[in-house]
Length: 408
Image 1 (cartoon, rainbow, N blue to C red):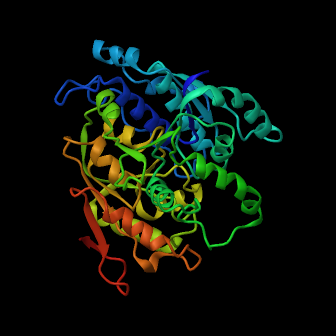
Image 2: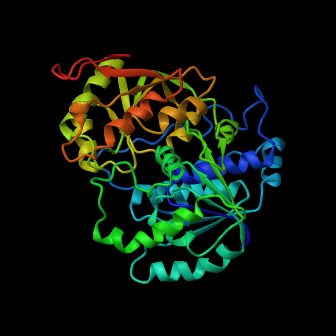
């Protein structure tokens, strides 16, 4: 296992590794070229009861989502792809595992080697993973990572010093990473509460400090950020645009439905947004925009989704793949409404030329929990405020009215 080595812990990270690899082939489809798959080739996303807690966690479940390989252009792109091994540091939650299984099959269909690593499989799994990956890490010319804030990835970074390092998007955290690494600050997730270190972080502080140095460029190492987000390039770091060319080449264009689709968020689960406020806003958005479906975030709780389904009548959908792929293969609503998240930056790229309108519902300060990080409001406002110019912005009229929403 040499050459290029990617470490992923989420379905979106793996998607963006495939997007990065696609840019390396130099064979992205020309504008207006026929898609590799007919519209709707993979059918709609599967809807499941809101109370469901897991997606199938089996390699047998991936057959229906394989990327089409029926054209010479598509096959040529796979043959020209750089030698790359993807190591999946498997998470424990069933939804993430199910989506990762499907994404892993898409990566294999592209000609890449995928190694599934049970990195969190109980006692001894950490030591076993570090032992098994130490040699390939040291011999890798380039390492691609999806989450520089991950303690697991930071620990792996202490084992090697690659000549080339690429960081691909894992959501809006890329914006925070670029800012923090540029200012030389300690790497801290934006939604973490407080400013001090808990006992676990104190133990891992030396690892994080060393990993931060590994993530910075020097005379012997180049660092690249591959992103669809608006980030300023830190000194010495190359920022490469992710235009979702692989997604647009392999899937769609989608069939459009009437009305709107809503995109859920895990801001309640991460302790940022009050659950009651969130439920009321979702209901208001559904009524205002005539929404029929709610695409759940993979970390949203079953109880919350059941409540949304019962109280709003929305069809709750547990996507089997990252939303960019689900939307691109369709069917998808003519309007997609999201809270501040990565999709307000990625969906306009993935759905370019389809006629789908994306809107972002800004988070009012009144919706935040008292225990939310002081940085939360500013960060979420930045995510919404830097969305593409074609994205509509929805704002609350006043704090005293019942969360009535209007276009901003």
